Length: 226
Length: 387
Image 1 (cartoon, chains in turn brown, blue):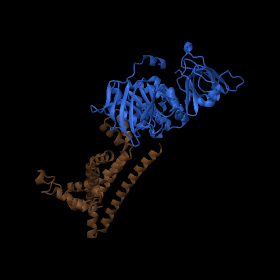
Image 2 (cartoon, rainbow over the protein chains, first blue to last red):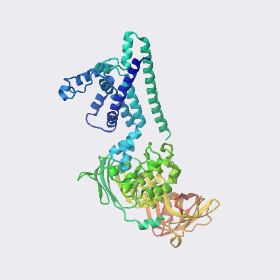
Image 3 (cartoon, each protein chain N blue to C red):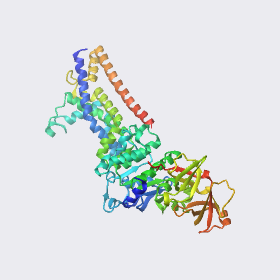
């Protein structure tokens, strides 16, 4: 295996890992809020959160590009700070994070919805504040579902192409991830390389989906023993 | 510490005052109650608003309007915009479905409210030991709660509530989801907790036997409103309530102590007193496996007692008890006769038809004999044996 392929795989892992760490906390909180609270405009918030799931990834990438452009709302001219994310790995992180957040948040929401809210009420009657209840009861009770959510988010981040290529490009050695490398290899007719990367993508994807299956089955078995 | 000692030393209980309104799906809950008894029963069919009432007292129903206080502490006062959070009310809540935390084992569940108990200066370790002993939880402490049986789960839920050092216990039909045999087995646990911990308790139940065995005061809830309150036996035999009580299995419940067994029968002495204070009335019942001296409860269905105006002879029934009629009451198609067999015992309720009522010429103050078959006397062991 060539060092070039290694650098592609390492960069892919790096981008996916950082983006997953970035997304984990806000997506969990968002999932919890959407599962437990009723507030004005909830369905609008919920729809916006789900939007990246249905938009063309290139549209999401282009939107990010406009936001972070020098004269964009989050650009240097408006904020006075240069995030310096265009055409480098940080841009890829922003793109993959945006694309995987809805998946993590929605899975987290479904997980919290599966937990009896009366258990949280019970924790409160036993003297725990809402915050303590969330950290000591809601989170541990949701741990399997949340782990599955994070695995799905990580896998989604690893496979992201459209948004990433729009904002970070597909520059070998700098912003080229597995998804981009397969595309480039196929374009130049390097079938061997494309095959190899495809097999890696399939293996990672399969393991990820299977582990989430096992996590949810474990939860069901757990429940049936009652 | 025996039961009588702990009761003698116990300080007066804080009065619980609840005056609230709460809109429910089918009707409005409107309750105004005050109680300072140790165990107050809330009786009523399902859907009468019992669970909503308890949840409002816990602070889990934010929509509830009105005032709730325990002693000097005000938990809810809509007028002064007071709302104390559920976590600050110091209530031990035992719901019908237990609500054990699936991510904690039995010991961790029991200690889920321990932080508060310790902050309040509660003697947690002592309580934990007594609770695990009385509820027989010692062998379960390291078990995963998802592997527990229904009865075990409810005992853990009960123990968890008590270990949180509560000022008030709310029990919402804690045993309703269990089969009858198991329910009767858990009754003694509750009686022991009642004796051991001087915590005021609201006990929701639609089981007349549980209610009589545990409660000092009874409130009947129907369609969200209180329709009766008072001594449990008196309330249950009220005209509008008795038909429902009987449908749920009304029995006369009397405390008793096992004397001895002989073949297929046992002898019990009625009443709670010992030695000189012991009541002399004895009852022959079906054989009990308990030890002589153990205290238990005897249950006699109101329609399993026959009345005679003269002492009958040549009967197969093993119990003929002289009694004095204290009250006569008509309840629909039957009449209820209340008869006292001893000043130390709660009176017995006997169901007779209107016809026999007239034929026998029953009158308040009249002397009668209660005829009870040994097979009609059920024994509920209360587990308060000398330990």
